[in-house]
Length: 577
Image (cartoon, rainbow, N blue to C red):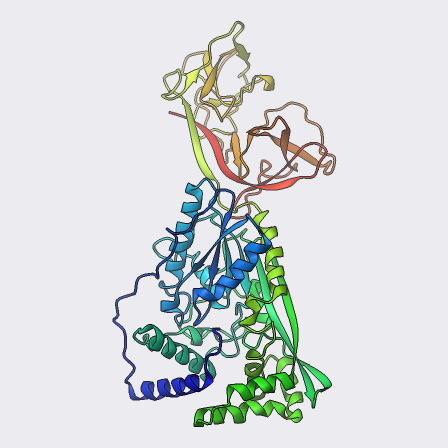
């Protein structure tokens, strides 16, 4: 939500909008979809060892509202992020599923990622979103709403949301919410000389409270879950109203809200998906930021708000000052507990929202405890490897007629050319083409070999990270037309930190000290290091690789130390040219 402006002008503006709308005199814009707002990407420098941190503002908001938040985070995490804000203020009263929000955000995030990758980085982008900006981020990852190109797999490194209404807001789909939206639209038209937006703008309607028993209003798209593996940190304001009388405390009324969004909603990501959807895999956390404000301070703010003598302000004053009546507190508390906001609670929430508390919907963006929570989430997220389906490459070193394929070369034949045993027909576990053999012994690394028809002289690919193949001779009969396995295992893995792993081919390996029931599936080495690492997993695992999420993961470590989960960036199979 935007900060409250001069209240006299605001109230008169709201009244004028209502009158103009009722008379049908609010001009409508052209039907052509407006272009995305200027991005600022070209003027931003991205470092290879820093990650882009994108700020996404909320309903009726502007990118400048995210500046202080981004600055505070980058000060707390120096040399970690390059901050940049996304601007959709030309469509900030449209539901976040609209292409002017979802598609423009997806295009923005992809472009930021591409630029950081071009600078030598890994292309991962982290998002800090306020209010409806958190929902916009979700829509931007789905091809149904970002039709041209959703956020690419593996780009989104993590999301931290501030007071995002995952389950809606009590002001959604209400007259109060509509008045707020109309007021901000009028103010933008007045100050930025824009035409008033199409009166079909639907964000306020689609921000209605919803859950498993209360659906969104008709025509409102449900925000899809983020891709599996994307970590989410949720921060919600939690205001307690301390009932005071002449400066003396009487009791507390917990509002469980930031004044606009309930804490159940702002931390309700996992229960907010489309009906029938399954929550994704990943790391999810939430943090309530609790504040207390007194009724004395709140009423002072109310009196300032409605100090103007105009008629609209007088009506608001009459409603808001009702919170000064102690007799309403039991009704307010009942409505909080029943999650059933009515007039008494709505008025109280509105008053709390304009208080000086650090936990209000607007103030939470600069509340030190909220910033600290965001930093904690981001530190964990940045250590979480990127989630994306691995790139697949089929290495084709063997010409079907014999010899090396173009781009490959055969190592010079040494004395005592490797002799291998292929008498027991077995296809290479990494094969994607017919005729690629698994031969013995394991010491020869002969698990990806090819023999042209009728010949006992063949070639083997031992190292999938080179373009060299080695000559071998079969000591016995060879089966030439072995079909590849139905589910091949990669001969090589490239992990997200640059570690290279080669499929195990027999041999005796030690057990892992901390997981004695695990076995080794791949031997690994990181470039520039002599340390040998191993991909460990349970004996019943699928080749040591967890393929259950969007991104494939492995557990890597030596024989004695702890294991680290890493994403597989690329997999290598073997075929014929």
